[in-house]
Length: 408
Image 1 (spheres, rainbow, N blue to C red):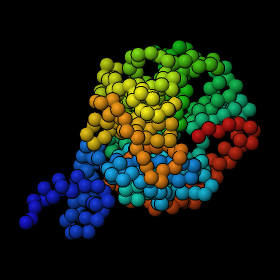
Image 2: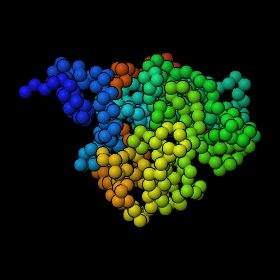
Image 3: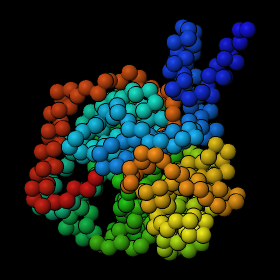
Image 4: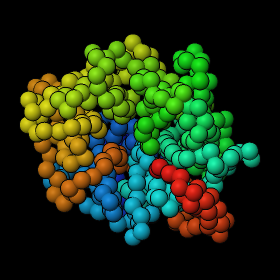
């Protein structure tokens, strides 16, 4: 019996990418349907809403591994097609969005990669652009911050990079460079520097100093935790700094009214929504979710997980990663060593055993998708990119030779 095309497409949109790649060979019509932008977006939307086709990406000192959370047998499998695989430096995941990973290594190489389809694209190197009047003798350290996400206004994927230069000025801050890479144009551009004159929020001569190298993507923006700094000292206040990928500008996100301020706050994403998680004295973690983006009153207290009592393990730091298919559990990463499913209703947890997982890792969630990089390259590096990389490395080495610190 022949099914209507609409019914066939609906059934196919519920399947994992691995099956869809095989079914492209069934017929020309199926191949055309699966490759169509409408189907790719429908498949991604359905997977995101149902919390299905989720994968854990685990990084240790040398490798990237993937774990299928839909599989009853949690097994860690090495990503053999890592476009930045190197014996000399580790590959880091700077961000995950719509099934795409933004990868970085310490050799200043950046790549976009879809682990489900194995499509990859090397990003051209962008050199540091320091002001002409920069006095190297006053610079003591460089801090790199990256973010990756989707710009729905321009239907583009973007990488943002901003670099803090610190030195001997009264507040320790010297200069900031902000650049944005566009996949659609395959180029970087310089934008206005980080807005440190937030007088309506911060006291004079104070600015936010980001504390996390890689931002988290939610609601068309990348987010970092920042600490308020001025006159060479931190004043103890934490901020959520966001970079809107559509408007290409920074902003401050309001925080919830915490039960107390004695905690270590950080930002994350759950089910596509911005969240904050507050670890308190190695005893518990408090998790909040922003239901309506940018609206302070929409912060909702999701749960408080207590160590030893609700999780039968001792841990120092807990981080929420994803919802279960039914939405009644959340996946927690504890101390970069193990995972638990925490039942929101019963307030109980179950440890996940992953075969082949490294003893210590950094985890990222990636949904399986057909999102394409538009055939944007097989990972080849142009001669111009190589020259730019040499210039960037030379500039870095000049700083390091003078005893400066470079923090990735």
